[in-house]
Image (cartoon, rainbow, N blue to C red; front, side, top):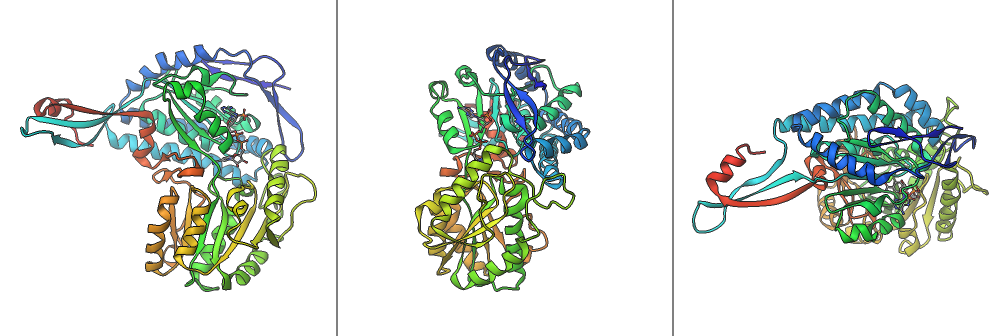
Length: 512
Ligand code: NAP
């Protein structure tokens, strides 16, 4: 069985030893092995900092944008192969594999357009020149310049292509080289996309590295100009946050962790209305797309007590048997498998713990661990039970929380999740929505206001858009990715430059 290689210091190279197996989560077949043992991580980081960084910083924003566009095309050129590899290594249906691949290339293209818009500059100005004292001659202006280190991207198992592309888009456009470390279990699609990028010959030397296999001692070597952007579990996030080298150098850190995303259905939403249908359509998609293995998937639905019955009836009709899980090779599969065999165990354990506090109202839990898990809706017996707002089962599950329909009660339940990546409010009542914004926005990185007005156009809570911020407070990790230009902040140092106004005007002539 082949060992897939890492791309470090400009060379493809294999780690030593047998490595970890990468398996097909449905058949259990071993597809390849990944090992990072014995690889020279210090030399690789040095190469990225000293060769890749200068090469990227020498490009203008427009040129970095052109590079992102070309990389999107390079990945797209092997799309068919990526679809096959993704289905085999991550258990997803063809349509879910497209979601990951096309989401990734679309994000690269979106940042390419931002780069073109920034033109020939190589760093950003932030705000206008401001007078600082009594004399108009003494002035100041903020600028944002790329950090001189390497951006280390540690990704989760669920989006092997999108995870690679969205983080790289922001770092490259800012002017920082990237070392991408995909989750070992689903590294094959990332590895194939990385091959397409290196084969294209487009990458400036040293600008991109790929580490497959365990993270090893990588973080021991980070320094004050490096960045670590992580997506995965809160436990691993906490380990990275407290890693001695990260703490010692105050390494710039972004964490996207578990999130118990919430949906609030307002009392004005009547069964059969356009808003009710939008809510149901988007809930079914969030439960079943990638088998609910999305960081933005809906986990909690807060709804007025009188809506519980119609919602359960409608979900029963829409979910079963339509979305029974099937191997992705089955052409009738509308929902695939969990991404790894260990997720099959973990997800069932957590779902069982949640079910202790709920009634199962749609579907049932499997008796034994499996990666083929059917959608399941649970009804909370006590909406305030702490476990239901703290335990995340990363699969096709949702919990219904009946409440009195007031904004205060709904906001209290949203907040019990400790911070979400996305919260959605379905209502056609603008006053209700306005009160929700004020009460819930502090607890979430993104707030979707679903209503009849956008029923035709809504992309739903689960789709992360490059021009909208992705991240959330507290439990969601406290990070921020994407959001258009905001996504570059992680990779750039803001510096307040003070001096004589004519000097500042000369140095920074173009307003951005
Ligand atoms: P994980 O164990 O936290 O792994 C995420 C990434 O961190 C992987 O690349 C992993 O590498 C790496 N890693 C592991 N230990 C590390 C360490 N000590 N230092 C630095 N990096 C380390 O998460 P997971 O297994 O992928 O998923 C577990 C849970 O995370 C899920 O059940 C779900 O709750 C949550 N999750 C959240 C998101 C999100 O976007 N918010 C996405 C996916 C999963 P290896 O693979 O080599 O171990």
